[in-house]
Length: 157
Ligand SMILES: CC(C)(COP(=O)(O)OP(=O)(O)OC[C@H]1O[C@@H](n2cnc3c(N)ncnc32)[C@H](O)[C@@H]1OP(=O)(O)O)[C@@H](O)C(=O)NCCC(=O)NCCS
Image 1: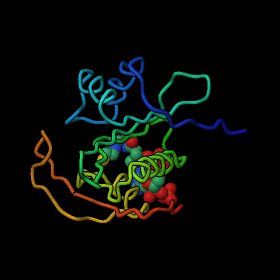
Image 2: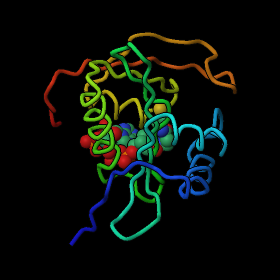
Image 3: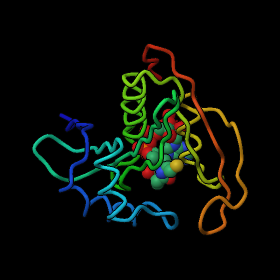
Image 4: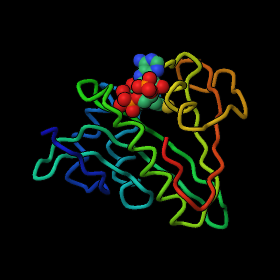
């Protein structure tokens, strides 16, 4: 039977693994250990694990603001060995549930204009381009801004 996964809040014990995963996933604009520590306390950091195991297969960081109905995906990724199994799609659905639970109705994100896989993922899950930022990333790369309006119910793909 295929082992299933849990989508759970990150804890401080996850910081080493999160920082290592960040190095594997991104070549620029990485979160530091200090940033992860801060975000675990003050934002929503969701990690993917298997029951009874501490290994992290993917994670996402979701930011919100007081008095705003928007939340933003600040970082998102799946470990290379775990890709292609629908985990990213499931993680997005978990984030959308959090957004709805917080009575917010809009999810936004930035993605590199060269990141074909992530752009395909977000489009498949109903995100649409709403802007473009030239030289947005530390390496000079450009970002596509995307957003998705959420109603009160989960709309499975
Ligand atoms: C983008 C990423 C999260 C996808 O993770 P994943 O678990 O493989 O994705 P899923 O299996 O849930 O795939 C869902 C959809 O994403 C898209 N997708 C995933 N990999 C793709 C690829 N290599 N090329 C094109 N589309 C791709 C497809 O639409 C796919 O749907 P399909 O299987 O019906 O074709 C993963 O490649 C990753 O972590 N990349 C590095 C970090 C990163 O770029 N994060 C996003 C920052 S904005």
